[in-house]
Image (cartoon, rainbow, N blue to C red; front, side):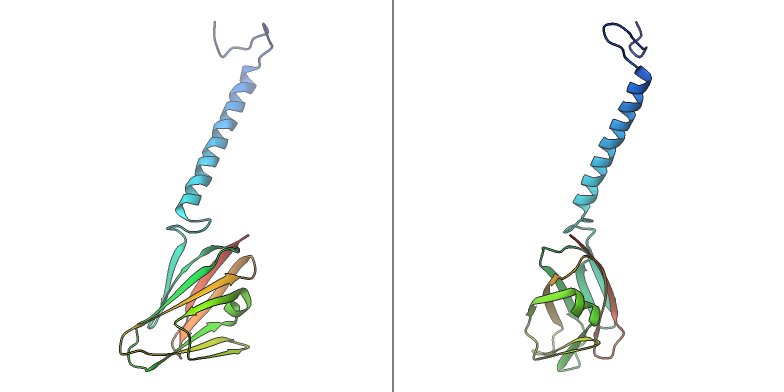
Length: 164
């Protein structure tokens, strides 16, 4: 007796429909495995695919490009210029509108907010390169295109996607 043949007894079986149902079921399994692998890779939050580095001039920014709205996010700014005794970091208006700053390390000596964004001035301790860390919460879902620059240098572009 052929196992894949249609039967009428003891119950009616449509094996052509059953084979289609098995194919759909296996496709569903593949989709679930794919979602789990994408999640483990960091596309839905903290993970290797999420971390991004943007550079321009003597500024380098490390951040998570995929963030959760309920989570505190870290933006790390590495400054490699050693000549100036003061470092002035400018963040675009998009950062000001889309993120609420919780903490800045080290604390800026001066800060100013204007229609074009936020200016943070830091005094240098010695001749070493500097690192500035900003912890912030997102205020909205979606994509935020942010620019950051040191003084009058070229800006570094950051693109952040915030999940609910």
